Image 1 (cartoon, rainbow, N blue to C red):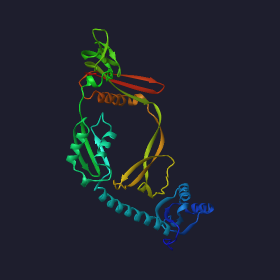
Image 2 (image 1 turned 90 degrees about the vertical axis):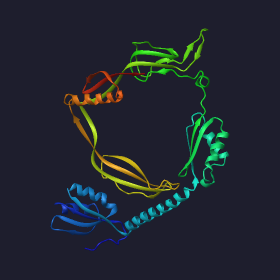
Image 3 (image 1 turned 180 degrees about the vertical axis):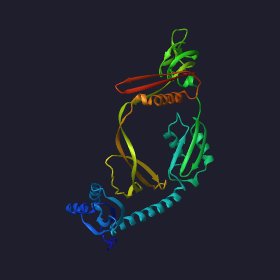
Amino acid sequence: MKKLVFEFKHNKKYKIKGVNLEKCFNNLIKNKIKLKNIKKNGDNTAEFYIEKNSEKILKQNLNKFNITILEEKDFGLLYFFKSLFFRVGLISACFISVVMLFISQMFIFKIEIYGNENLSREEIISCLNSLGVTPFTSKGSINLTELESELLENMPSISLVSIITKGSSLVVNLQEKVINDEYQNVGNFTPLKASASGRIKAIKLIQGTLCVKVGDIVKEGDILVEPYIIDSSGNKKSVKAEAEITAEIWCEGRVTHYDYAIKTVKTGNRVFKDDVYFLSLPVYISKTEVPYSEYEVSTKIINLSTTLLPVKIYRSIIEETKTVEENIPFEEVRKSVIEQAKSLALEKAKNNSVIEEYHTVTSNAGINTVSYVVVIEGKL
């Protein structure tokens, strides 16, 4: 059988097996699908070539006649040049990336700032620029010790600064001067709010105006202490709301079970689609077709280079799914659902000592909700 390796068009060679080969071939011919170099074997197998653009119809017919694909392989000069272009392009991109990586280590391309709360990033960048530090500044021209001293001198609100170079980045860690809250935030204090739901057991007010008392039940987000006091003249004076409030805190875990449900599950079958980009331009775009009628797609980015001129592979993972019906009465899984809710509640309790625990179950038209409550003692 003459091979079609050197034919210009992109061909694919298939080896198949089945008992309905003749019917399948006749149906393909009726659909004007050109089969080349057909070779039939005595063990219900056959080999042939087909043009790449006809493989979708081919596979539909193979599935229709319950024929199994044993082997498939690409041939043709067009396929060869596509593969060669991809390999040469990828090698060239990697080479250029290595060169750019070497060059990038000699210059500052990025300025990172940490520790600023009141000072804006723009103010600090502007000061660094005035001191001669900008993107594309040579790392060898920067004296880090002198730069730290000059930054402290030009920005009086900074009390401490540390500057290092890391790769192509200049990293600035700073600490701002602290101003007393009483003078800095007068009139801008916020109320003290409950961090969880529970029953108050003890209160130690430090400053502010109480909104609750011992025995009150509060929900998460309720105001406990207002940020003001009333002086002897009857005027309100803003203060920071502070108090130590102990409560029996209710940590709830909630799980819902449906007696009847339609779910989408993964079958385990998957295909991959890799697209290569260099300088945000496509180098290679995969032509992989999705063979599934139901599927989910997730994308993973693989960085071949993290320099100024990056090469990235955008890998699409296409996983086959199917829709299934579940009919599981709640009573069959009651214990496991309660345990799930309990685990969620204990996770919220954060290993605190448990005072009490209980659960409730509500059911309505096949929808069953378990609420498991763990009671702990802690600070609100």
